Image (cartoon, rainbow, N blue to C red; front, side, top):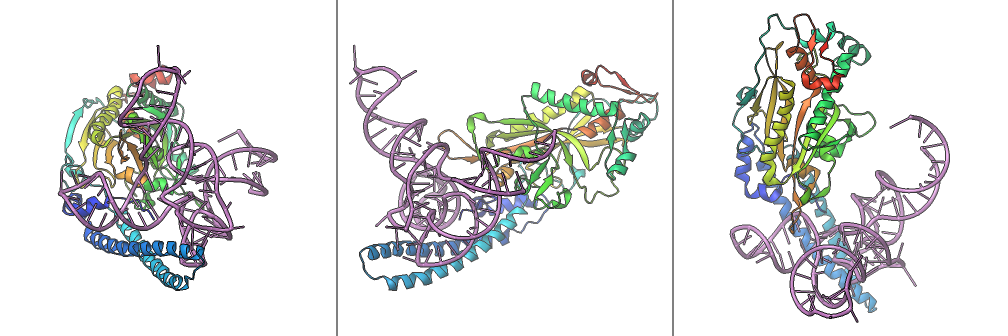
Length: 427
RNA sequence: GGAGAGAUGGCCGAGUAGGUCGAAGGCGGUCGCCUGCUAAGCGAUUAUACGGGCUAAAACUCGUAUCGCGGGUUCGAAUCCCGCUCUCUCCGCCA
């Protein structure tokens, strides 16, 4: 039975030290020794059982010949009956080993790209570049949730009533603003950056969640539809990356670039007490996502481009931001390299993440089995990338805070006015 | 939700009273040949994964597995039995 491995077994086997060191840089002591032992045992058993199967095949053929010739083969059949029994047992053992190995692999994070700086936590993420000037307020700027409430364009209170904490309503110009931001981003990425828009399902099944790495490790971060195997997507990355699961793409078509709007749902387990007010950390939020599939040799350059595409949104909206590169200790589980875009939020007096752009190398492609065929050669795994372009709720929060005026109104950024029916000011 | 039909290689499509079928044939693809009956002809070749051997690595070679998925029967299963999934058609329902 063919098992598709989550890591290249041969690679891990022969570059054991290197893999071990790469993973150690992430700060997780990964037990690869265990893997090596299991792998060795598996290969020994596999070899043995394949020898047995070979004998069975050869003898069975012989039995067929004898029988058609009308001769007796009872002795051989008896022997084979025994052999088959043993084969079955060893097959069972191998299957158990496969499961153990696969389980071990599922919990091994991606290896960081060599260019990723070493560090232990978010505090060690180097700032790569900054853009924009922080506005000097002649008054004391208010946090976006206060602005939203006083302008009556965001209703957190009733969101809590209707659904629960961390849910909210947008209303009037607020709802329109949210929609404007979505459309602005989609138009920018499709019109100027060459992405093909897709509108995905907001629920995805277990295979898809495993394909992009949300499962099995992060099940508690997601909402699951009771009685089904469907999960509410935590990001459009899931359905869009899985678009091509179990497919072999035409090499000529790469890179394939998609952008997608979706609502995103996150259980935010373990986030109790953090960002309890406002739009920063909701159970449901909107996001425009950028997703790329490319050749392995292009993924580094594609990550730079994708990041720039996301940055362009902030630039056109006139929102100050900085770009940090996540250090080894702060990177997500599946990522090989990640840039975070952090927007300036006056009420926090700090930069907050508004986009995360990652190169996953072949990590997701291997799990999701997405390949391409280079001209005249075998299928290879593609590299996948994605990034927010951008998180809409946080963008709205940033607009409200950065564009607020002393009289309590909010100026609409010029780039959004065409999407707001020409509206220049909210309030 | 109810009833029926079907799932075979890149595609189309054979193959079921179990045996030498990884699987006929066609198309497509690749390589070579031919080139005045020309929007052609001829020949060859054309799956993937894993393991062993040989390698610097390949190529190569041997083996195993794979005919929707998972089990079962059997010395032996694409072919028989059971379960599941998906697709198609008809009915119902609905945005």
